[in-house]
Length: 147
Image (cartoon, rainbow, N blue to C red):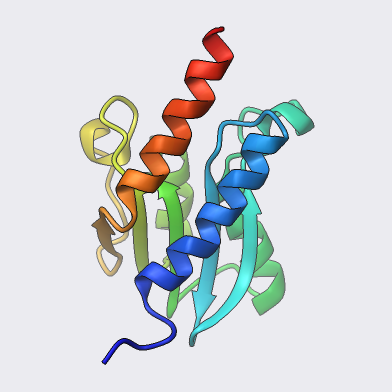
């Protein structure tokens, strides 16, 4: 039996955000934060629009979720993001004490795994959910950018 709200369901929501970023000319990374099967933050990269190198989807999601919850800690929350978090975002996620991170595509060059970034000891991280769809969107964006 497939539950209506599983990792694939929420990653599809993050991919919708990545598509929005793509349409705006942003690197197509989208994120949602979920608590008890409810989306409490829905964001995408805004680095170009805000002229801010820290405006990654994950950073926007952390702020939005913390505002929704009325506190800085994201315990019992799951972040769904279409690209493995970078070192900066992983650091912010560490401080947020988020319970779980699920990403789609692995970032072989700048991802927190290859960079050796530590996450909070209670944070679980899993990758590969809809990885092909996320990677295809990223490739489409960068091939268009290079033309």
